[in-house]
Image (cartoon, rainbow, N blue to C red; front, side, top):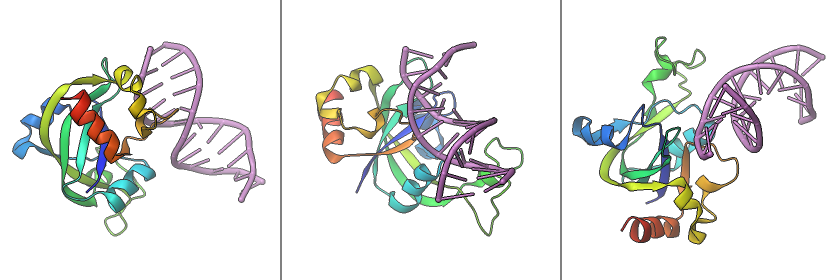
Length: 153
DNA sequence: GCCAACGTTGGC
DNA sequence: GCCAACGTTGGC
């Protein structure tokens, strides 16, 4: 079992949206970065635990917890000409992009980026690395434990 | 809106 | 394979 941080723009999908979604789950479609795709395709498994992060918004930070509930499969939006995620180079025979599905676990207080940066224990966190833009990053078990038991207690 | 940092594309 | 140009991310 692994731990992850997944960024979502709350305008697109917030933790509240996930809590209100049918069966409280959602397909994590729209990822168009190979590294992030590879994490989903090669590393993520059902049961993996997720820090749900709000990005590109007034208060960026961790907003809740989620869990991977479906392994990666081809992202439908790559085939949809009307989608902003459409990819002309992807075909059904050779899909380029995949998505997992996640389900709601809990909403937490908003644990802001500034507060995360203040934690010595999290100095090595991938999310906080200089210039990091990856929308999906692995989280060390120690980091997960610190965040969930110390900061989000 | 700015801009640093990174990723992708495509000519050579 | 190199690398300039361009596009995107995402905090501020």
